[in-house]
Image 1 (cartoon, rainbow over the protein chains, first blue to last red):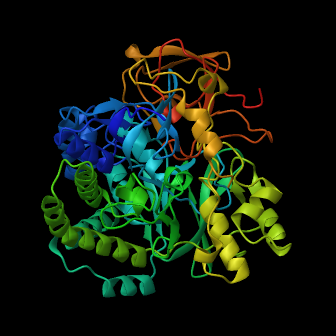
Image 2 (cartoon, rainbow over the protein chains, first blue to last red):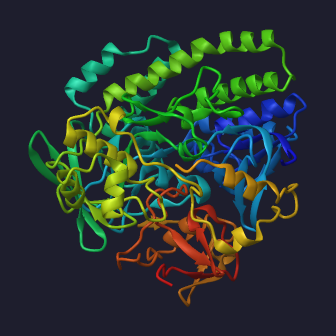
Image 3 (cartoon, rainbow over the protein chains, first blue to last red):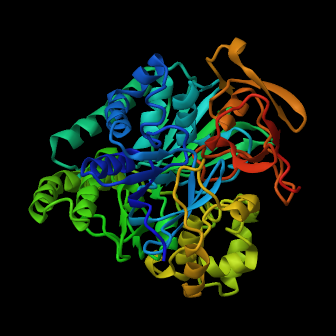
Length: 484
Length: 90
């Protein structure tokens, strides 16, 4: 079999991955971090090292605090491989297949920690394929990376705390916001109050959200609650947003619509490794099953941060440290008592961050996928141009769920491999059959989880010659794999 | 749709589908193209226009070829002289 190149491999250099890698390296273990971006920080602390001063100020203290985490990681001795996509994960074999700018490589590790983070969900709506429709996260990426801001009339629409946060940041930076559309209703606000987390930090965060709300109103930005549907109007480019509230349709002129329907775990690598997925009814999405230490049922595979369930950056940093300690304990570098003590110390904070997440889930209902909201012409699969009407037709024919829908319609077969439509298909199937989404499940995920250039595969070589390779392990490992 | 604060003197030239464009070096390729007003990311196999949605490597709306190799533009940094092609059907 193959020689182990690293004690620990970490996938992702966001809050969870940086924290885990730093903590593992501090135990004297060898650790490699693979990340798709060109600089460390993930999405939350994106470009924290290089951001312009004015932008950093608008992004707030939490963002600037990311610098400490990144600095500690830079000094930790962990090997860092930016610009790399990990497209397969097989703990116990050649652990990871990594694709970088200079080629592809198999990387061995005794333990693998996945810290792949989350992605924004967009529940499809009419016109979401028009020029001028992006996610709120995309606007933040452009802001953090290069200070680029929306130039025209901008509407922000969706559910989740990020909508408020980004609207407030854009307003501070002088963007012309013509509307903030939210799914929260009087009923959901009351419901969330019953789940109000009674802890100082959570309440402070909620208060900060209310302050954002007040600032938007004070600057004359219409903040509309109880919006249960919206559509982008226009031919090629967006010209207006039409939204529905209590059965009434209203229109806002717009040059840009930023949408967001909450965060869902980026769990593809966990799925190809064979990790079990559960339906999380709170976020209405699949999440990999892990224990309190981030351990999966697959020997040597651990999950940290939002890819193991949405809980935010503070929880991600803590979970990173906790799992790193558990991995170090498994490798004999940490005592049982030290691990137990850290677990006990972390439990309360993690429980509280989870409670805050539950509060936000109650506050912002997710838009439904029924025929009223998602009419037949709406594109569900952006890659293959499959519409809600086509999907309902094959559900009527008896399709049980996402995998059968895919076989009949090509929904989810494009380059994004179902990242954008999987959640919608599960929800649509559950609604059609009157079943719990947990029984429906998601797409069967297969490696490689991103398109790989054949040239890279054929040369399967080192990342700029820096990684020890083992060519012998790959074909053998593949032939032993059970067909799925 | 977007405005960029980066001074234009420092920008470098890339070509996209044979057209020359000046954008800031070292920055996010997809964001730089969008900020330069280049919102055309080609068409997919069905002839439908592709558009970046997420900017974090998930949606493949910014998928293009850089010097002949498929890349997600939102995960790449701008390099002077890069030859970009958006046609996915080739």
